[in-house]
Length: 112
Length: 114
Image (tube, rainbow over all chains, first blue to last red; front, top):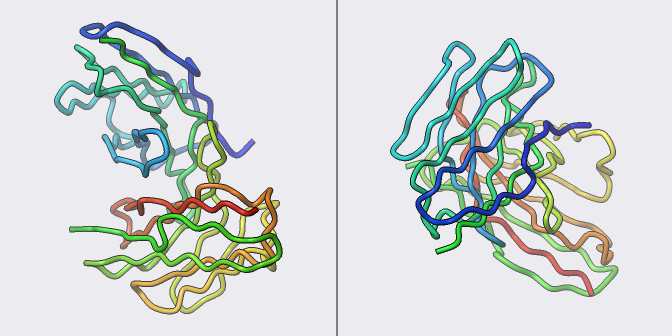
């Protein structure tokens, strides 16, 4: 399959709780990126983590990368109803000319 | 900076007709543009990669004669869905890249084929 895997496929939490999404991939990468997509809309780039980085923060987002396990996680702290969206990881694999391969996505629902 | 637009944002057409979707990088020159397709409740699937002035490279399973890609300049790529059928109804998203600093995504085009 072209795609990596994400879990969970769907996640429902209450406002204020933390949300963790995981992504696994298959090949060596240059970097891994996380995107957000509201229903029927375009992608919003959240964060990029390079293959030589292990953790990165941006506001309420925390991304980790474990290249030995070929996995990454996205943590959203203190979630808000406005965080409700689908979240995708995407890998920029080595020697692939910059192509991005997207994971299957996690549909996050944050209830007020 | 790094804004990518798509036109139209949505289109409805009859089965058998052809539809052209434009992708423009508004404030930078894109050496490479990518086209993705997304079916409802699914992820983005890469269809093809296009470099300015050369033929597009299609992913396995994507018909090059059905999805014509023209990357005529460093700011414009077009995707033409030829002889569209209802199963081609989808959300088509382009992205543009300059050098290796990542891809910038357009807002997408929703195609509905009746």
